Amino acid sequence: MSKVLVAYFSASGVTRRVAEELASVEKADLHEIVPQPRYTKADLDWTNAQSRSTLEMKDPTCRPPLASQAPDMAQYDVVFLGFPVWWGREPSVVDTFLDACSFAGQKIIPFCTSGGSGIGNTASRLQEIVGSAATVEEGKRLGGTVSEADLATWAAGLGL
Image (cartoon, rainbow, N blue to C red; front, side, top):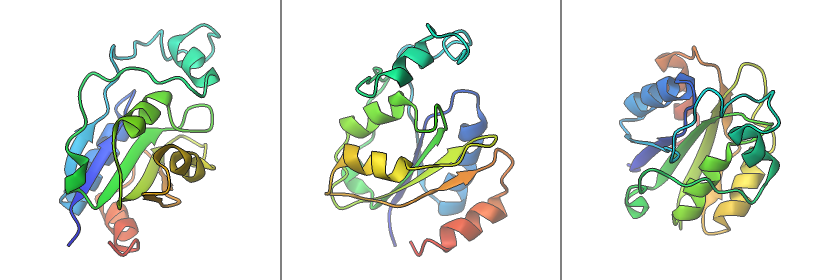
């Protein structure tokens, strides 16, 4: 049986709820990706061209600092990676997490939460960041009200 981690970034709590339910279903460890400092409401104002999140997302090389270290990734076979969709992709703070970890031999399965945007080409972006030593699956967009039964069905279909 694979050892599983659910790592996630959540700005509003929606992704956190889905990640917690997925970790429960998969009997997985849970790790929150926390930026340093945390985002404020003003930081998340996507209508403000000078807000922190807008400036970060305009720069594909941006890597916001993290508040804590990632767990020992070598102990995991599978990593579910959760995040809200920002500007059609994962938030830059998720890229910081990926850069900080070694995923050699692991399978990464992204999931995103969004009111309407899909997961897009996130898998290929994530694959570029982690390199060829890991496998990044296509992943799935999950609504904020997804049930544990739906998560169990999705995870079971992955053949983990």
